[in-house]
Length: 159
Image 1 (cartoon, rainbow, N blue to C red):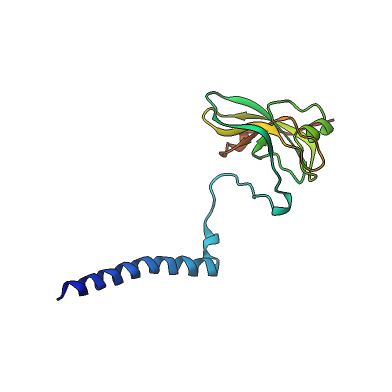
Image 2: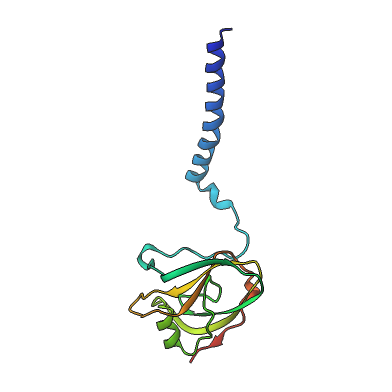
């Protein structure tokens, strides 16, 4: 057999190997079979394009905690108890937290939870940008990793 034919055979085999799985993935996605995968742990749906705004003003630090830390999460209405946006400042009132963190209209901030963030958690820390007709300016934290749901305390009402 000529050496050129070996190369053609090898290329054809590699091509079949590469396109076979891709075709299977394509068919799986088309048929919706990919939806059979079950995520592990809590998940948070990404925001829709209509609510995506610039979240930060000024410098933002990405850090990994070296100890257990306490933060606060204001929520209510369309915002859930579990979430990735927190503040190191305890909320004084619905109005003050909505203004300082420039919360979206669907977050009514009726409640807050004390959040115990485990050591070794990756997060961004910075200042909230103005958004949703709110001035921002408060310190905020965005968790970049999921933490256990029991890290969030039971709801406490905000005045």
